[in-house]
Amino acid sequence: MRAPVFVLAARDDALVALAQLFAAEPFIDTPSHNFRKWTVPSGHIGLFVGKTTIDGHWPGIERWIVGSKSSAAAAA
Image (cartoon, rainbow, N blue to C red):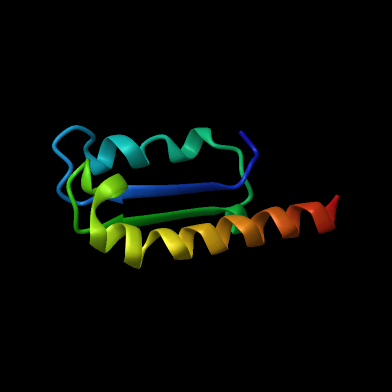
């Protein structure tokens, strides 16, 4: 995979262990400037519906994705 990748991990996730999620990184062939990973104090469901994550983290992720797309388009 060479697309911009943002990995958002829940520190207290009971379904997906951090080590398991981050073990995929070597298999992603994306330049380092297009790869980000964050760990947030949340459980699995909180990543998607938790107020703190939605208000505090997703807006930054959205800005990063939009910026990554703009950078990729300019480089093409």
